[in-house]
Image (cartoon, rainbow, N blue to C red; front, side, top):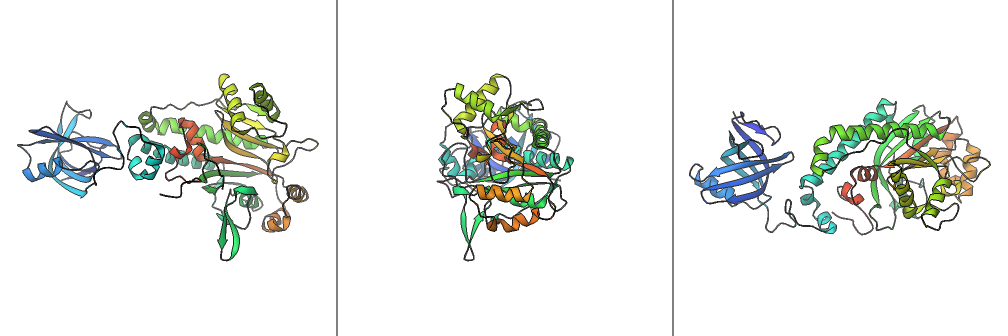
Length: 434
């Protein structure tokens, strides 16, 4: 009986097996040839002694172009000459699809390839074990986020991605034609997850695409990303929201280290597990750090990329990778964030990871009169948000929440150089395909 195996599950005692994969390398040494067959889990050596293999089979396997898709059936033989301790002696094979020559880029060649070339041929790029490992870890991360949320009583929801208005407003809205009407791609599920706080679903989370029309060519900005958003009711302060984020992020980091050990080994990475609770810094404290670092920044200004890096370096020198920055000026935050009465500040926070913001959140304004005043203060017309405001007229509990850029979290976790490394098919100001 022929067993269908992957490279991870083959055993020396299996007998006859069939393995499907790509022809990674072929070495023809005359009297004997070797085919390295790669699948999702690793590689296996197919050994072909010329005098023991049917001539047509030998010719087919030794003349394959690299990266051809092939299925090989053969006998597993113990061998002390291979890393796995066995090899496969082929009995038959099928070339499922032969690869064209030359390849658009190598898979195992030790040659540096430009990012644009890699993204233009992403299907080939992901065949590299170290690239594939990133997306396997991303899948594990999503699984862990869902686990942590459900363990803490959250319900997973899905909200519309084509909306009549934007949660954040401003120049980062993508405008679309919706049957002759103006509509916008969702910047976040903010308005809808707040509406849900009035329904009795008092803890919700969502992982879904978000869109920002940011005209930025940096290693941290893209126009489409996966946002992990949460909202929770009946809070007394934003501190409860920060504590919940700590629980979830801690669960993710520990889980990645445990369940993703194999992928981390491929990448040569380790995951640090910062102690909980994470430090709380105020905006004013960070402003002082940034100025001491030589950056001229005015009161109320955003810390910016350079400012975040200065704070990150200072915190890193103290042994802290993750930390909250709290009490931002209310003028710098969206209309739904609650003001801190009698001050220019707000009940808001960012979570930074080694000098980069990965999350924003805070306590929301649940009192409709103050919410409308906040809208008007921001130059927004409350009439454009009637669908949202209605939920606040009929008993809205106190609530708060967050949004986390999942790719930013993964990039900082794995110390990757560019956010595009964590997105299968990135979208930015210059890339609309593949």
